[in-house]
Amino acid sequence: MSEALSKPEPSLRVLIVDQNVTRASILEEGLREGGYQHVTVLREMHNLMRRIVEIDPDVIVIDLENPNRDVLEQMFQVSRVVRRPIAMFVDRSDTDMIEAAVDAGVGSYVVDGLKKERVKSVLDTAISRFKAFNKLREELDLARQALDERKIVDRAKGILMKQRGMSEEAAYALLRKAAMNENRRLSEVAQSVVTAASLFK
Amino acid sequence: MNSVQMNGGTPTVVGFIPLLDCAPLAVAAEKGFASEEGLDLRLVRETSWANIRDRVVVGHFDAAHMLGPMAIASTLGIGHIKVPMAAPLSLGLGGNAITVSLRVWDAMLAEGAVVGGDPRALANALRRVVHARDGAHKSQLTFAMVYPFSAHNYELRYWLAAAGIDPDRDVRLVVIPPPLLVDAMREGQIDGFCVGEPWNSVAVAVGVGCIVVPTTAIWRLSPEKVLGCRLEWMQRHPDRLQALVRALHRAAQWCEDPANHQELARLLAEPRYVGTPADILLRGLSNRLRLYPAGELQHLPDFYVPASRAATFPWVSHALWFYSQMVRWNQVAFDESHVAQVRATYRPDVYRLALAGFDAVPTQDSKIECAPEGFFDGRRFDPDDLTSYLRTFMSR
Image 1 (cartoon, chains in turn blue, red):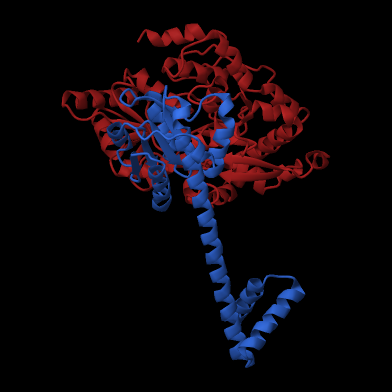
Image 2 (spheres, each protein chain N blue to C red):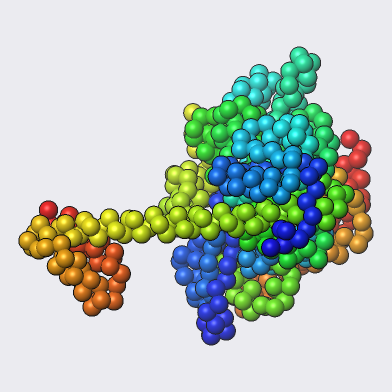
């Protein structure tokens, strides 16, 4: 991973603005492991400006689901109190980096004048941690979906067992056969059994 | 049309922000205007303007519902990387308003303000409120808008400044995303805002705000959002872009027809579009707004114009006016070399190619913006004489 290649600078102050607690912790942990000692996480959007002035970050990392991104952009446009951070990487050669960041769902702002080599490792870490989080979320969604599907199949089996006096194995076999014949997913067939049963109640 | 073959089934991905003026996009996708042009239009709802910009820049979106000034800022490289944008269509005129909290409205009433009154008189009443607070050492009023490079920012500033309120010194100006504005006002974080519908009407409906000035009262036929894409994308996909312009133009005409307003309000009320109640969306669509919580619906002619009055035409003078305001408010220093880039961002030429043989379109690219369709303070904007125009703001 590029994370290991670019050298972190422990002295940089990094601010994470993320309303998702889990994702923020994953990133915070990643940065601390990478040697960053000054990492602050902001979940509350109240008094964002004052908090930023207090923290005085060199780099700000924000999730792209966060509508408060526009709030940050404005602060940096007009503020005379905050040292001017600017949207990450402002020359054309950085589009790959921006693309990787946007793909991962993370945006970042860097105090104007800070050399990009110094902050690259922060963004690398943010990108890889956001990706890890996305993967985790997908896996969780899949697991949840699998669980939901199992539940619906169990209910359909129960209906068939009760109404047709079938054994559990026979009920399952019937559902599978119907699914194969109709070229549908087992859970879809189960769902239609459950729906039909509720209509004929 | 044989454009179905032409576009070969490649999806056209367009980002939007949940606001009333995303209507032509929703209608193009839902009512067959896009598919009639052979387009597989996929809309993606976004949460911030910065995301819209970034996702257009990296190519996630082929085009987007974009703030007019945002397209210009991107072309000039202000605040972000310089990526030339093209705006071949305007997504309607107007649709914005300035709303203040009931507390500020009461204070304005005490200073002689009248509901639906003259914008200058209203701004003067606000100035007296601002000065009284200043004299009493109370905290400054805070006004919100939605993005630094937006018509909302410039309209709000224009109105405040006309009464001698310096938007950078006499009040605090902040950005708050549209869906969060009403809560911020309820919680007392902000005293006023300038935003597009339905958010002004939402503030009135939930009893936290009062609409003081529809921005049509500031500039009768004022520009707003555009269809924006990267210039490079436009050059690679001229046919697809023209098909999109046609689809959106026809969708915008559908949006303006009063016979469709009920259906359109219900469509936009769906969570995948704007997600606010249909009856509130209907107010902006039908140009009938309730200005304060106990008030009657009031007819505001031309409040939101999706299609007629050449509302979809990307006037170069609009682009130049936005640029003049960027300069006026120190977002960028005036530079003669900017002018050509600003002109090249709005693309009436592409609009004309797209609509050739469909509709009568303006033959000029630019016009002088003045009464009766112009500004309430009587200023005249000659797009060919930016420096004189800018000078009129300096002698305050």
